[in-house]
Length: 304
Ligand SMILES: [Zn+2]
Figure 1 (cartoon, protein in one colour):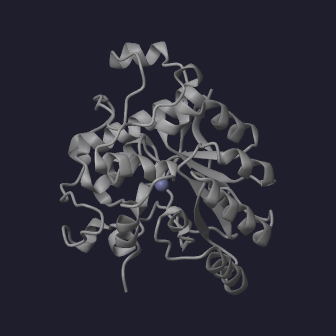
Figure 2 (cartoon, rainbow, N blue to C red):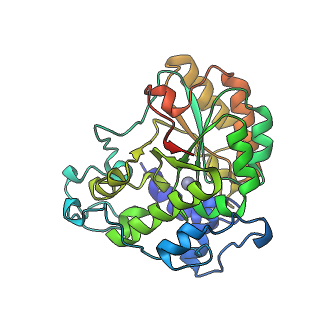
């Protein structure tokens, strides 16, 4: 069987429209960063200038800013690896995307079958918000959050939970410790400046997490959120989809019938995946939980 991660990798070569994956695509191909209308960007706060010396939000590769509270000695020295290259480390490294390994503090399921949405905020998110009548979970990219603060605020106004999905959708196991920290810190600063909160929940892009990545995210107080049901909805926006919409609905109907519990991975970065999400919502109804509710946990580390 072909691993989903390698399917994702090949699909991304044709990716053009999903916000999060698009960022990754442009990074792989050396393209230009998505820069939103600067007038509508989240203003770069003075406290962040004081701390970083910068005056505007970074592009796709955020700079590493050292943080006092991160202890580099606590980070195990596992090898870096590219997506789909899964023989770099022993099983004890606990890679989710390579070995489906889930750590004791990862959240990967829920007592009610619940949708989660990655890669926004994007213009497509707005349509999804119109249909959501329960508290749902969005894992946002920092770069999209500062470029779409109005949409980010509408997610908040809807009473939904927002977690981090890194700054620019990096595959974290391939990065150095400093580069991982940069992806996390800038996503947190984006959420702080845009939404006045500091996230508790973190979803690694492509499910790319092992104990080296966890040793960093834990020092930010973040808890990883994975999934146990994958719709592969992102495949619909590639040139070579390997799932039809109907197959996705059939999958979800089966999950509801046989188990009716768990976390479903979906995306709000494109109109097509949002349309699928709305139909899945119609199938499942509003009896769903946000990730924090699944584990009786807090929504944010701090809200201002
Ligand atoms: Zn993503």
